[in-house]
Image (cartoon, rainbow, N blue to C red; front, side, top):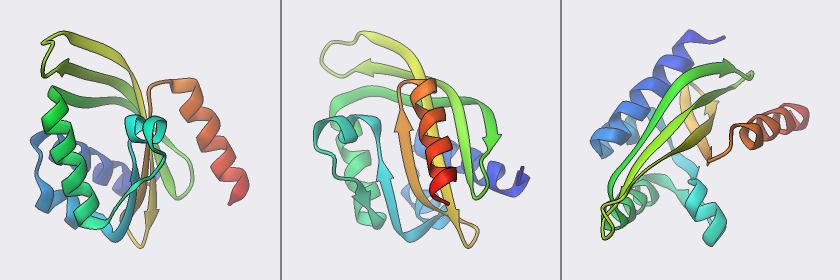
Length: 136
């Protein structure tokens, strides 16, 4: 496993949880494609580039009082890292806390994250990571 890539994913997750756009942009390629689980299920369009990350963070803040991915395990998948853990959320209007499974596939290019796909099902993420390996 590329320990350097795992460390980058850990830094990115920490920056996301602090809503630090500058660190997020530093760790990502300028053309990053981010496919959050909720966006993928609603519209299907990924967020792209720094402007996309900013839009996603803004939308998260408008919808959620708390929205925090907590990866607990990392797996090597070639030029990508698979993170498995949980998502801790609290609805802004309901105040209801929700804990769910969470997974993220982080693709790398030139030492930076070029694509992020997230899932609320570990098995679904594992299947997606395996398919991505087949596609090369």
